[in-house]
Image (cartoon, rainbow, N blue to C red):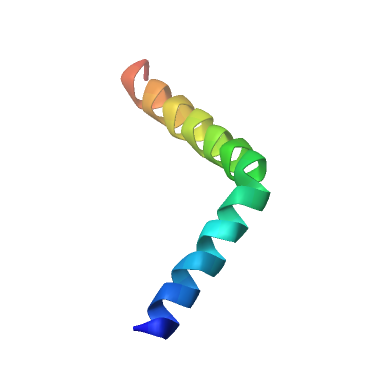
Length: 43
């Protein structure tokens, strides 16, 4: 149980340090998905 708690704490720290990078990558992925969807709609 201690290993799970330690791993969760490490993951939480990683997210706290890199939340802006995660947001940046997720925005790019969302834009690519929206572009692909629009490409299929207007084809």
